Image (cartoon, rainbow, N blue to C red; front, side, top):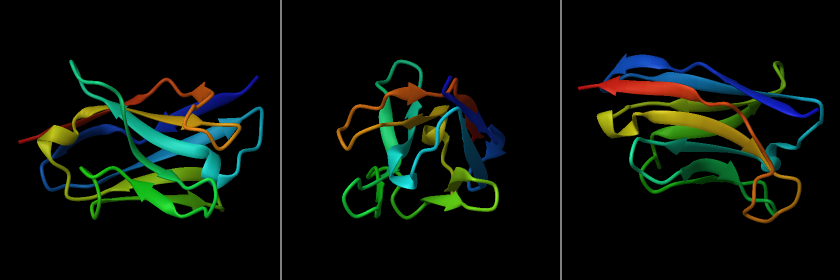
Length: 119
């Protein structure tokens, strides 16, 4: 059974940093299979970071470019999301997800971790 588990969320003041971690079990995923999403109350879910299936390059949503970094931690075998210069509008539940093919459809989802940025 495939499971994705997020960790690292919490409450942080504006301008602060958090690092989220995504641990997969039950199946091995390449880095390019993993993406980070978020959903704020009353808003649609958006992908904030992922990897190009073809090149493996990191891809970011416009709202987080220059502030968030997605990378694989080989020591922990996790995909991390380093979030810097956090803003109140970054407040959301953050999810990691994994896809099997290079489409935009993600097949497996974690339960999410809450990130709250206070003003």
